[in-house]
Length: 245
Ligand code: IPE
Ligand code: IPE
Ligand code: MG
Image (cartoon, rainbow, N blue to C red; front, side, top):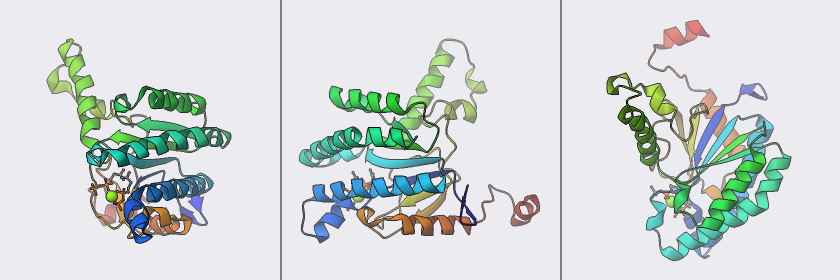
């Protein structure tokens, strides 16, 4: 797909950071920042669909975010449930497929049910795929994949020395999806915070100082432009890449 004359990354993965600071700047409780963050999600989803991005992965709640004050955690859960309820139909109408990746067994029964319903509703849609990473950790993802491969070894179907990278990749929560081309983190921190560790081996990184609630389509376009200026070499030399293109 192209943006004007520019190609668009197939898979964009975003750490939506800075909601708390956004609220603090306005002398509001952190929760108001999370609410404003949901609005920003709506805009970015719309823009990605228009641009023809294939997959948008959004880090919504990390496996480490349980360490926050319990009040903030429970408000985040409520906001997640509310957003699912409000958005599922709209996503479906726009041919968007919603997937939740992460250990959802730690969520309440009603939230798990809602997640299942939203995924079910949109499962046959053929447009943009949205991965919401909730109670997600890159190490958790790799660990659960390795456990599945280990089961095949334990049952005698596989020899340990025959385990390949592809076999592990096939058990990750993102198995059927291309790896992220572009990773964006808003909010000014420059770290991966246990996001898609395996999947981002060759992803291009883009850091923005903008706090997530202020991240808009123009800024996404800037990130994509920066991505398009990079030369992805995957270990080869620049000369080889230029010959191939
Ligand atoms: C990101 O914003 C949203 C979640 C982690 C749920 P933060 O809540 O981390 O915002 P800051 O980093 O405190 O500003
Ligand atoms: C990462 O943001 C997780 C999400 C955006 C959901 P954090 O704000 O929790 O990350 P750290 O703790 O600053 O690394
Ligand atoms: Mg943060």
